[in-house]
Amino acid sequence: MSMGSAAPEDYDAVAVLDHLVRRAVSIGASDIHLEPKREGVRVRYRIDGVMTAQGSLPIELAPALVSRAKVLARMDMTERRLPQDGQFSLDLAGHPPIHLRASTFPSVHGEKLVLRVLLSQKLITLEKLGLGDGDFERLQRLADRPSGLILVCGPTGSGKTSTLYAMLKVMNTTELSVVTLEDPIEVEMPEITQGQANPRQGFTFAAGLRAILRQDPDVILVGEMRDPETAQIALQASLTGHLVLSTLHTSDAVETVARLIDLGAESWIVANALLAVVAQRLVRVLCNECAEEYPLEEDLIDEDGLVLIEEGTRLRRAKGCPACHSTGYRGRIGIFEVLEANDDLRELVKARAGKRELREVVNRMGLSPLRDAGIAKVKAGSTSLEEVMRVT
Image (cartoon, rainbow, N blue to C red; front, side):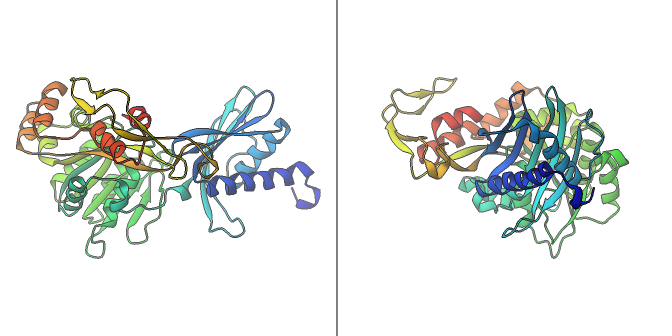
């Protein structure tokens, strides 16, 4: 359709979408949700991992907005009954190009549109992730290892990719060949080779990994170990002189080790290949403009009856002001548990031990769990107790 015959609502959709994206980027949102309801299109942003309402748009605008996104992301305009996805960049005046991932989903009142802002995934350095001193040194040392498997685990949106990228950044990429296989590529790193899996075309993680091994790599980053085949190839690669980094959707370090064995890999291979497991979560950082101090009213006690924070300790909590869009928080920081494999752990893995035995050994190794890392951030005043309880 030529611009000459465009209906006025088409112009509106273009301007509205540009405005929504520009606003999302300016307040640091990671996702834009446009949800058609009977009375209008509900607009919500995900800011620092939490959904926040942004008002609504007239329902008449819904089809035009979805069509605009489909045109940009090269989706099928005529298909409204099946989910679709694609990627595009928006060039807005006064802005570097904004990369977005779009996905549509048919719902009762029309297609829901979600845009993921890939610009929000800027590279974060290892220093700024929020690691404790010991864990920071540990990860730096692990990034120098010539071979083995390092896994980063946590739920969706817990910052796993950022941690992996930060580890790649500290590697000597001029003397090493680093190849990644991602789905999708979230941040472009010019000094390494990045590949994007495309399962529809038969370019799966497993097929891609096999191809990478023929490319003479030193370090391989696999976006995710989704299936036994990928896990087995990655483990084999880590035993044959490659450093392999990957992620798993598990909750903590012990569960990750158990899951690796569940994926059907030989236990002796897992035992010999595994270097370390990093479990992580993201907690929101209190807004310095409005956070308020208060004394803790009673001891905070964990499941084993140990006192985590004593009654009367001065802590900070969220309040909300214009600077933080009334959320009480600005930005996020990671909390981590880093489990480095030792001989005791390897023996247990070889014996295919259960979670309970693994946990006992890990506790003996003195691994400080995620919640302790969170509590340290609460005591330091950078986040609230509610926030740590929410994610651990």
